[in-house]
Length: 424
Image 1 (cartoon, rainbow, N blue to C red):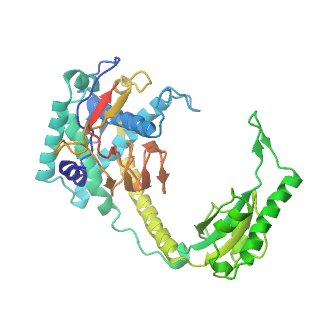
Image 2 (tube, one colour):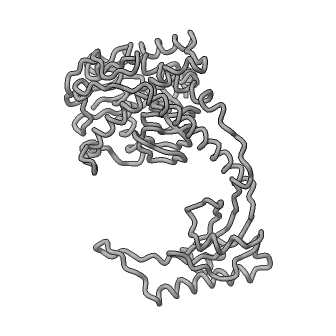
Image 3 (cartoon, helix red, strand yellow):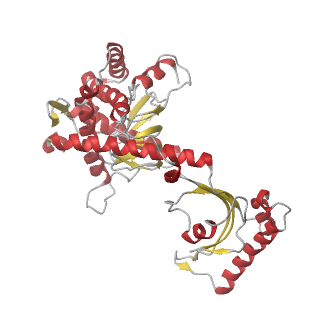
């Protein structure tokens, strides 16, 4: 990440900058039309369309990272009868609504955009306009003012999360967060799939063979001089090279572990191995209690609980503000924007890894939330708008989030070190 990029990231300036190219054709839009009104704020079609295309491009970027593509996704119809593209458009307006609310309530927390930040916003917006040809700008229906508006949204987003969650109780008692750590060898007894994709249940003989394997692992552990320190994974592989053992942490509210496994280990002391093979819902288990109270896992859980509290407080404020100041979408204007497979947008990567002050957008690790657009970075707040393909510890109510989000996301597209957008 170059110096200028870091400056943008720290200032909360999130936008895709660089040269774009066109392929195919799209509808001609008048970006000056008002697509939505929220209180005294009016959102132009250019602003809304640009934010939508950033989300679309980020989705394409994410899929390509994993060797896939978004081909066919936007025209795919959901259970509600709408296409994914139409639902993403709806989500975008929800995201914009939240972004406007953050801006409107910034004064409640004495949050402002400094002169230095405003200067950077204007410079970044100008660079975007200069780096893109006239055809691309026309297709996006975007103006420098639109880009500045988007960057201002992201700056307020960056600044608002902390003050909005400052009063959240950060004290978490051990009893609420306590985590235990176990080492487990799991041998599945789930059925197999036949050539037609149908589940074929294991026979009684096959299940008994699985249980015998688990018993063999248990016997090997108990035969060790110190079962508490035994390498369960290595011993499992001595029974069958395909078997593994791994450590797991859990608390009283954990829903990931098999209930029968949790019940069987809850009375064990540190270092104690469960005396019998545990028969779970779809597996046999050999388990050892490594720590009835794991300090590291408990501390991590405490942090997660605080994050969830902040997420809830943040989202509750947005919902409360949204009830008082609703967004009025001009459906006739917004309908002119279509999100389909025939009109695609992608980010163009920089040709070199260090090009100096290029103005590339990168949010990297942002400590704010996303109320809308696609995020593939590490965000420590919440997501109130996106489809989450990554790791989210809170909730996701709308658009595309592909990264690791621990709380909410208020709309910024996180492209890490991406210099340009391609409209294809």
